[in-house]
Length: 329
Image (cartoon, rainbow, N blue to C red; front, side, top):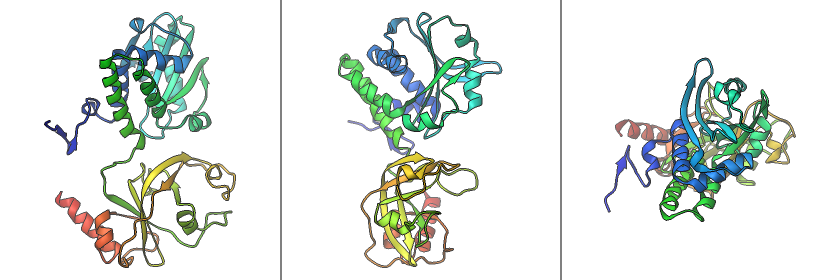
């Protein structure tokens, strides 16, 4: 069978053609709900705990109202319920201002339906959203969260009782959501190289090396601004200490938290002002020769391709080769 290549990637399902931005994701979910009545019923039931008739439902995409912004999705049957959905990519939640504006929109305020809700939709877990949504009710309208993982589960449950065409569509939606849920570029061979040492976080006896070698974990602030930390988890991370590269690890899983005590009992039970990625590290990949640090500042974090780290004499050399290669590509 022929292959379709888009932007260097093999297209395996129709939803990939729509894209991977926030608007693309909500558009894909809305399309699946329209074409798969069982899926629509399960999503609405999960949010509002009511039974609906899918053929009465209207879904509005990117609805504009002056001074109230643009909603990602507005879903209503005009009789029982009215839902506004705000989708975000990654572990991001809508702001208080955004939720307030949505609660004041004419569609939802003037509707006489009994069940109303504003839904945050992103990769955030329900537990995380429960803690960090700005509020759980605004202007009398409940605010709740629906994760990509939960939508994936609902799609999978719906497949079991759907027709053949719907089964195929929901399978493709699940594949699409599965790629979104990691936030990682799975095909990427770029490695984020960080420096760790014998120092330790405040009020914690564990050293940074302990986190990596004893617990096979690592954490850092979610990036943005001038921090220099990644905004999304890399596919691979490497650690250097004692003047050389020690190990490379695939990031098998991660969570986002503001209280690191939830993940490490040795850490103080204190909420941080910023979110942190906590990575679960795969088995160590070690070079078969000593890879010295090279010409790098002691705490500098750099990116390099995995093959260069395993073959170069120094980390700085691996970085430079990777940069040159990427410029050619």
